[in-house]
Image (cartoon, rainbow, N blue to C red; front, side, top):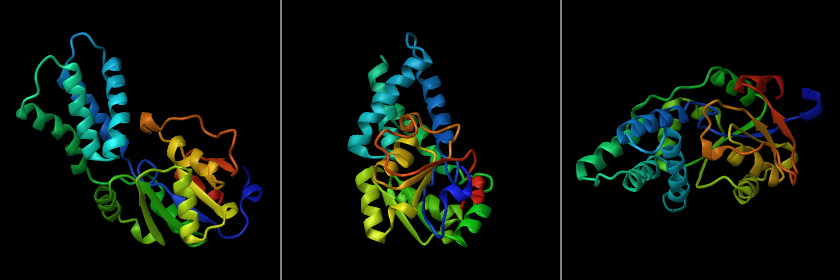
Length: 237
């Protein structure tokens, strides 16, 4: 879409963090690969083990939320479900290590992000909106060096239409001039559209499988823009 078709005057951009501003899921995928190799299941294929893990993660989110603690719980529960070997304290610690080594990775900013945030911040109102464990997300935000580009930060438990409506009410945002920018159809794009906001879909090759969903929905009330890279936002805003 051309800029003139969408943008008129200052906008509010709610911007996702993980896999939109910096790499995230690639580290979880590496940990999962290590875990599956360690499990070395004799009858289940890699794909079958992964499907069990996916279902375990869906259940774990309901009780443990998002983040490394929930992920570690899912790995342990998957091991207990699939392994004939009982889980010992040593195995428990080893499996937890697969998850918690993720926290040791430096924050890897996606190409073009700082320059694009500087461009957008000079023209529009930026709010960082991410979901997950508050200490984990706060730590990544501070280590990223990107905090000062944003007027505010919102770390929420879930991104759904009610959450977007609450954020819009909190900041007095006008839906026609408010956009959610992110890589997740399930959490960033579709619920924002359902809430009457606009959305920008920035696809990422390693978006978490549980965040996959068809982009755009029949009951969308907002406008949808798709770009291939975060840096392309400079062409539209």
